[in-house]
Image (cartoon, rainbow, N blue to C red; front, side, top):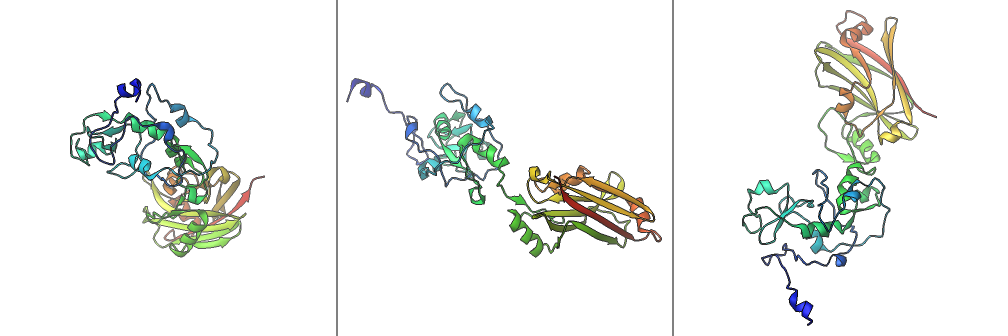
Length: 332
């Protein structure tokens, strides 16, 4: 043993737990990239720590996509170190530790009332910078790899990418219930047809009639959804009644079952009328990435005041009979 080796004592966190961390970790020995670690946290993306040794802020803000890389497995022991023992999701700076070296994420620290969930010792304000540096050395696959994303991303860029990943699943566009189903477009089309019994139509033109026996009962509970298949894509036609301030109104709008960038390749028109009058709306379908409520509350569609709708219906204005026609076309 050399003199330098004798003079350099080994520094360890206290405690024998498997979650304790050696502070003299050799970061070059940590393998890069992973195909198995998935972070399902909905937490806010936090910039990595700024220290004299580490600065990955530029990585977190780098808009350039990272190229797919060969998959390399990160050992389970490293993944375990980066997993919060309370919420069981990936930890991001600041990562806290107790005097025995047990770690937990900043989101769970207030929930445990300043007591380590592993050894029950007082937590204090000790920050585990070593583990934060380990995380900065890792590159992991997108959690949506099963949906087709092949990218490998630095640990601190992963959440930001996943919040914008084009392969992330879509939420069910059905507005009549709080449906939590999510998936790709073919899966959602079958879900709408089989579970919500939504009408499916082929073609780029439509002619629909909406009838309501008591139009004076306008509540946020009247939804109608029809799905159209054309140009090899799927479109959702929504029609509903709701209160706009103190005024009861009806609204019709179209949503595209795909991403916003692709939705801009299409346009649509809606027309409603009667007794020699008509109203026409023309617009661009909104992506189902935007929630039904967001589109409705932005009034991005054909809006018909109740009095005008009853005028179009004719008769004694006691029954709503609206005929909405329209078409969808692809921009050149």
